[in-house]
Length: 377
Image 1: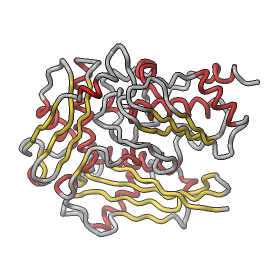
Image 2: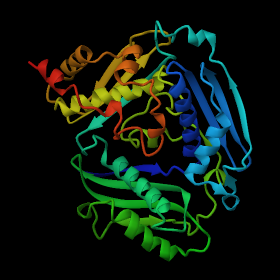
Image 3: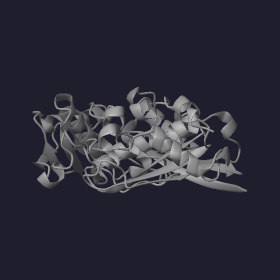
Image 4: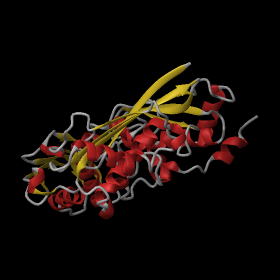
């Protein structure tokens, strides 16, 4: 049986990703001085202002406005011509301390979950990164689009951009790419024909293996014919609004919360990272070709209240035995997740763009395979 599945990614200049990057840059700035900082920062941005909101409890001293401006300028919004300029955009800051009711459950001596919630982790043997093929190549295309802009290989590009990849599967295996969609912000003096040729030559062809493309593969590049106004000048950006881009492109479910701007006591983030870590090691140990893991927490508790797995009928041993091995090998307590994955380090700006998974980050380690296999009958 054949079917199609589509995933998307965005560049760092996308309005929502601008906000995610500011949130995580602020988080990293606090953690670099105070590893026990409690941070929950959200950002809203449009053409008129940037608003930074949330709760922070920390001994660190951070110039939040400076961090926001540097982040915006690094992305590439550095000119009034773009209608959003990191040098001049008004920045409004509205922060308060973490609620004492929450703080008592996540102190240094007793690190329980910072809130109730459920998270998902996923891994598949479909790619070397253990990510599904659609989101893997959507990210690769978005990164290449960013690269050719920064290196001026395509000199007329601007920071905002989106990619989308539709993969055709046959009997559960990817066999070809059915379509590729790219929307790239550009200067007003370029024609769509020129852009179409440049994007195929410099973005698509270097990324997508030729065996996945054929004469029936469809290309949709700047389909409206014009994408001059972009970023927060065109659409309001908000932290946490690209959660499916951040995870598995819709191939697996997402939990109840976003990631960016949250320290690791928020299980929305640490639990999702740990679930990915567990899933990847289970698949690498060949207990299943793919696995989705759900973990649920309640505020203040140091253990999950439930763990659920689904191997989509790819398991090589009974799912009940996989779950039993997981609970023997892995410690799902918030305190352990933070310690084992070194989540009090300022590493979060590395996660913000092009997905939180499939990168050189602690939760991507495959270091439990031998221990997992030692529990096999």
